[in-house]
Image 1 (cartoon, rainbow, N blue to C red):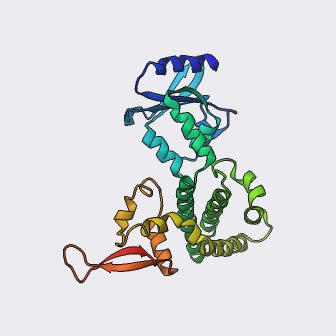
Image 2: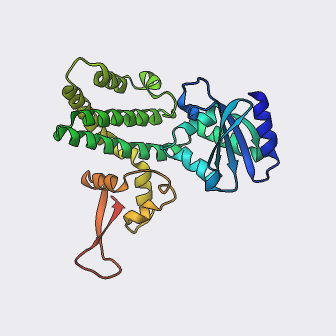
Image 3: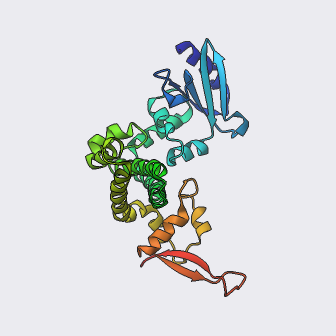
Length: 291
């Protein structure tokens, strides 16, 4: 594998647009870390070319995936929850090329897990937690028991991720192995849901009750980033203004759902705002922090 890494290092180091290059080997043939291929090459380039985002090549008898991303795309991956493998790629990868220590500095920053990144991940995980919990609750009411089980299991995963973030640990790395150490209570719920001899309906109901309590108790702390933004100016915020805020724009969150839940709990205020068109019959709803 070393000669393959050297070949691609030499190939990319002459490209002025390439900032960094990292190689991630597949530890086991069945491991999905790099989608079943033998080697992943992560290329960070100043050129954002969507046609070159993912390439599969064969070299020296090995199957290689080349993922090309701009610094903006890479930082979007690291702040969100939709590409969980990125933390493992950066933690386990061998840096072959690194102009101005870009990738080294990014990796060191991520592994230190700064509060700014924790706040974004916590908000995104809480959004997913509340969405999947509510879906499981609806499924149970509709007597869709297997769907309820699927969604409450997903909710447990998001709750576990929140618990790990609160401990300063990345939730992308071996979640349930970490959970046994960091939060035995959540791990016990996971065991109850998946292995208890109780009926499936009773297991789902048990975890739903625990999730409902957790949603209420964690809402304020998990939405701290959103509160900070809402309180950053005197004027109330529209949904689209919040959606396009730099700290929220790259996150996959159910913003409307979060806002409504926060209003009902009294954590934020809902303000009727006169639209520019002057339509007094349909006032725009905007949001502000509680003073």
